Length: 640
Image (cartoon, rainbow, N blue to C red; front, side):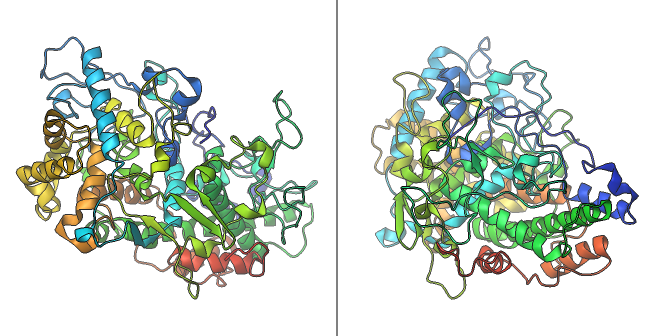
């Protein structure tokens, strides 16, 4: 998947609308709404690894630059220390931190180790790390046996579309893309998270004034509609789409010497990562349709160019953006997190004022991000295990995963915009009422689709080295200096013992080691006895998150259906923490969506102009609603 240089992080200011709006009668309320929904500059990414690529791509900076192993390394070495010695925290990189820690670099005794030593200590120890992770990655090619050999590999509880909605959520949390090593000893002011988390920042950018290319232009009038593209006729796609606008907007880049009129190399969306592959760009299109459909219901009947018309346009934009954001966050809370988290953890965090473990830290990190490395480099990579070998995009077309990943403006600019065969029928991805059951995601386990081992998609980090996404995930986690599983469990136990005591894998270290050993020995492949001993006693966090999900807390009916306890804790802390910290005033965990929308509209218009929006608790509800407000019920190709 494509990777391109990113901008610096957003400037954190409260307003980017023209000052003339302030003269309107509702300017105070409008400015407050703008602030609440995260209006910011367009800035994207800055430093560190981005989960954007990790959710389905790996560290593509290294892949494209060909700069080798140092692209994965971070300033966490302790070369001069004797084996097993405790290292004082290194200076680290401002803008990055670890889970449940005020430090951006953990002391050695708390970090993942290989054979009891720092895996980055010497060239010899790094070579041992590489070879061990390569053998573990190959072991992860073996499909698990579920429920005594009777259970399917697929997870009917999580339809396939959620794999990629999770990727969009990841982009909306994390803005960084550069490898950690590039930022070592720099003072660029970057950080690992977005300034406005889980507020559709990757859809809206900084708004029409700051990110105009993501919005349709209108002569002498304010921009408010998000751009759409596609639907034209060409020799390969002779039948016009009805209506047009079924793809994100794409253009030829005239300053690119290799660009030709028919080679649409660039995308006109707020975050280019949302063109990582065909399914994600189609999901981005769905959210553009959502905004534009809401806006059409809110906009004044005439679109003039006077100052009052412009003010009305901005009010409609703010209300549509706010409504789309509330719908999105409501679905994250009520649908996405409910599906992927352990039920006990979900119930604990899905409240108005969740008690966050991170609140027990001595103080808010002064140099760190709100998004810990254990989330970006371990827990939230569980989506890789959910990826299918192939996808039925619409009733007429099924594609192998590799084809899906290559259908981008970066990889195939000559085949853009997306042809009819790539236009998603969303009942294939989400459980839409009255439609056949959608295709499922794969169960969460230490097993990836064989196509994620494709050398052309995920080539070696170093010449003649190992390849594949599993290996890249393991190496990225190791070089980021994450918590060891044992130390992290101890830390959580010290803060909230009840979370650990209910799970035998976390409660009993001996049981955890025995279960890991049993899994590693089954179909062990090239793993040696020494490898198994090392990995069972100190498993990489990214691997353990998948392993505990597959274990299912000894409940065969839940094996691989959700994250396990530790993975759920990390994901819940970050996702619910982001919504709590960046809470929208109209939003509470206990209120209905319609109540939140009514409060939003009343703050802007002094009346509820969003009463046409039904209670949308999941993606299966959202898809037909978008079809209705965007006039896509009878679309060709089909939308639903």
